[in-house]
Image (tube, rainbow, N blue to C red; front, side, top):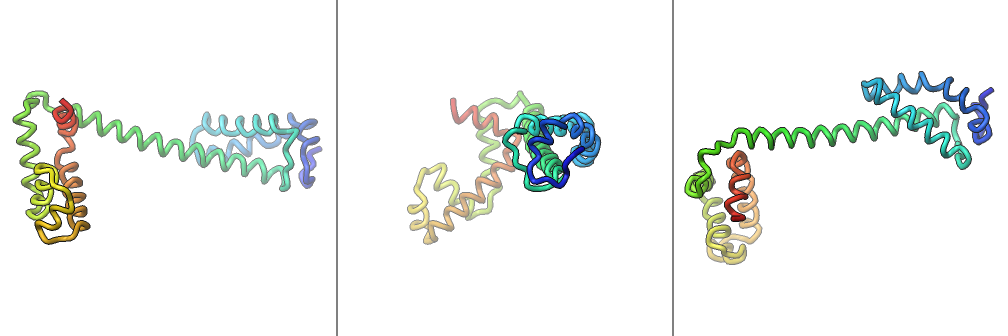
Length: 186
């Protein structure tokens, strides 16, 4: 018989593991499946919990009911699993965007002149003050402090305008970034 209200389950786990497994597996599996929405993933999570329970049976000192302990372990494993899936999905989306960008990249315009024209057009689309600051910084090679003194503005304003310019250029040139990187490295 399971000692549900005992403070320490070491002997119970050691002697009644099969019974514990049979008593809890289905409920834990159903609980996990509700969140991970996959039979196989739910089964793996529950198997991992029982494996942990067996491997740590001699050092476990469960201070709550066995039911609460097992469901807590499954809950935490589900959280870990779902977090991993979110990260994997974000990575997959990023890869899909990069793939789409490369597929859309027209190989007919790989000349430096065309890349310079795309870059120049994008810079010309910047707001006037933003464009002026960007050109002084990135093309003329002036330091932020020099630009600030020359235009009678704060260094903070220069930094903010550069950040705005870079953000707008990144968006405007998103389909051409691989080529831009290639031509700036060569």
